Image (cartoon, rainbow, N blue to C red; front, top):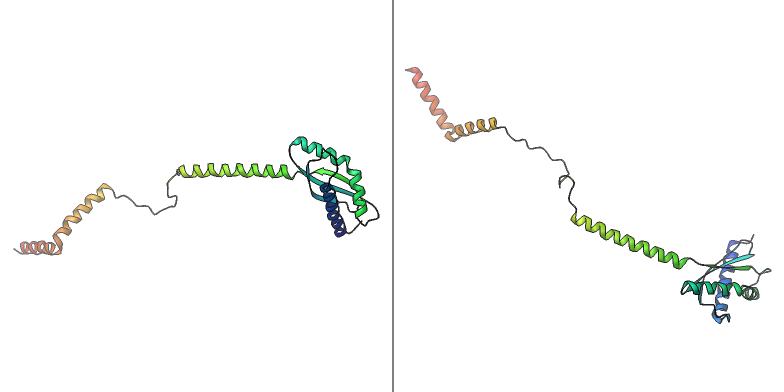
Length: 178
């Protein structure tokens, strides 16, 4: 098993070689706008998976996949000429799912934004289920009617003031002495 750093370097080199060869042209009219996104090499350096994307419709993707499959042998010999390895790895072209994943993520983000606006709208028009202020406050007891009457009597006494009360006591003592 090869060193992982060596496998990574070989994968990078294969990516450059295949991309340059596709850029120079494969003379296949089915080949569309192909971009090599990544290359993975096995630990024993015997197999390379080449990931690619195609800009265009589903039909153009299928045509480009067929063109790459037909050109696999020529691309492998090109890789063999340009790398310094005892054995040339076999190539496998795999359509990369990055555009589909990106479209799915965009759809999910759009849906999340729509839900956020719905929640925001509901929050603006929402009313409290209970009291507006849910915190417990000390109770204010309402006085009974009897207490109110007593308070009025006390208020009557307080209107006269202490001097009037003393005057009433003095007159009561004077009458008792007679």
